[in-house]
Figure 1 (spheres, rainbow, N blue to C red):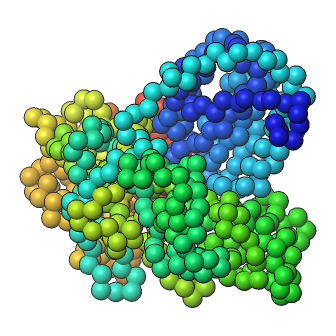
Figure 2 (tube, rainbow, N blue to C red):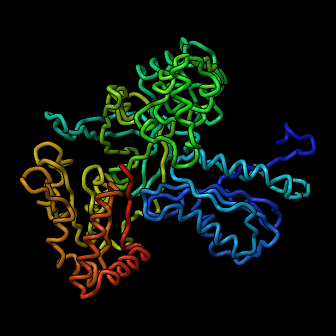
Length: 538
């Protein structure tokens, strides 16, 4: 806006919600809030203090104009809850919402761009007054190591937890990273953020699709994490930036829009024009199957006649995001060793083999004693009870077992401890029973009560919820008489939903309630941190 209109000389501040304390909202005039909803309807960890401050604040902000862009994922039941709550609370405190709250399902850039356009169109009419900036940016403190400046951990151990001899068998790996000297700390229940590197053959395929050699000199993107090995280099080769900083998998609509103006081949023109027919670029109308099956290179290969420049293609690509893995080790056991458990992702679309970025980076390309950029991601809504005498029921099939390994390690170290009941599930006892030896040793030593469901070892499939239903009377006694806490980790869309339904049925049948009353009972447990979930969409 500054470049397009000489009347404007705007100096907006972009501030992480984590640093909200440096903001005096009584002095602000216009505030755009971009905030996501994590997990099962909670604010991101960085935004938690701001969120709680806003809910508790009684300071009127009648002078403030604002708008909220709420980011979320409709696969979760409390879609965009954080953004909706922020919008409601700011309105209750008197602020004027000048652009309607916009809910974004995952990365729907058509919706995001529409909101940004509305914001920029509104600003000239806001009649903002000028003043000296009161914010002291020196007051913003950064952790020694964080998402922006990850620690270079050393991979010390890596081994398969599964036996793969059949077509549908999954590779699941256990990894241990040495973080000695980092001063990084974590609590059982937290996650490790890992920055991966892209697969070199996939990079080569994309470079070919870009009509490049890979040796072109390009600028390091503004979002690049700080790396002590090359933090002073502003330029690097195209191959280098594609290796570390760009997402080769997910396609932004910007790329299709750029290609529409650029391709010269007749058939290619017809194809891309068909994608833009009848406003298909409006939210949820884009032919999703076309994009779902394709990566960035596939799109460029579909329109080989393009003459897009290197910088234009890069500007239409997403940043390579870190991936998060629940930590499967307790800091009380070893504060310098962080363990993760990950299922290696491999699949096929359009006749081409595809790979999960981070899991294959660790499994296939990261050698023992090599370094890997990592940081800690807090998960304050997934915590063991302070009182170790409280019984806990842990429900985590597949890699959902990861944080529970840390929980059990911690409870094992207690002088005395309440019941720890673990429900684990996998397909086959002899192929993907993760941590089998350790779990059965804990069970033999009375550290845990172990219930394992093998879904494919008999004609009728058996899941963790079937074992929960079988044990409904004992579970009811634990949660109702002994104030036990329940933890669920794993797939949100199917497993967590099915377990939740089973728990409602358990409470209803054993507690003499109807299902609505049982749901309210579990909701109250959740409000009291006795029913916690760490779930994700597969």
